[in-house]
Length: 199
Image (cartoon, rainbow, N blue to C red; front, top):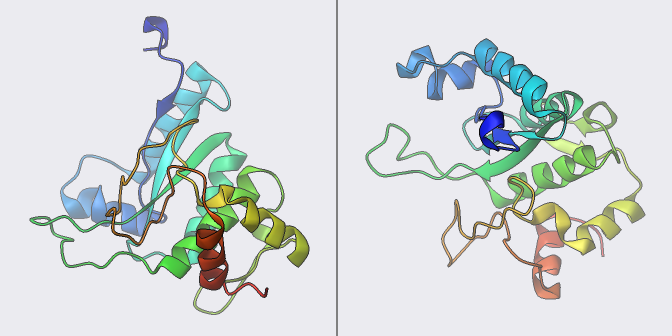
C-alpha cells in the first residue's frame, strides 16, 4: 500500500481490553481477529509507514472502565499510534442492538484525558481513578484543565488528522459526542457541567 502512495493507515482495536476485544471482534464473536495480532499489525504498520502515520479506533461503551480505555490510550501513544475515540452506537439487527450508548459525562472525561495524553500534558499514570475505574483526577493543574476545556479541542472528532466526519456515531439531534466543527460558548458551558468543572 505504501508503494501505491498510501501515506497513513488505521487498524482498529475498537475494544479497550483483551476480553472485550474477544467478545466483539475475536473468537467469542466468531471473528477472525486476536488482540495479540492486532498489536502485531500496528507494529508492522509503524515499520512501513513510520511514527505518527498509524492510527487506531477505540469504541467507548462496550463494557470497559474509564481506567481501561485511558490506559490503552497511553499504550497507543507510547507506541506512536494515534488513538481516535468513538462512542458505541447500537445498530438494529446486531447482537448489541439493545446496549445503550455511553453516558456523555463518561465520554467527556475520556475525551479530555485523551487530549492530555496525546498532547503530552499528562500520562495515564498521573491520573487518579476510583475503585470502579472512574477518572477522578487528570494529573494537571485545575487552571490548565479549565483553559484546555475552554478551547473545545478535546471534544472535536479525533479520527485521522483533519477528520471531520459529522455525526459519525451520533444523531444530529444529539447528544453530540464528537463535534465536527468549532464549539460555541454555550456548548463549552454545557461540557463544563458534564465534566463537573467549577466555574
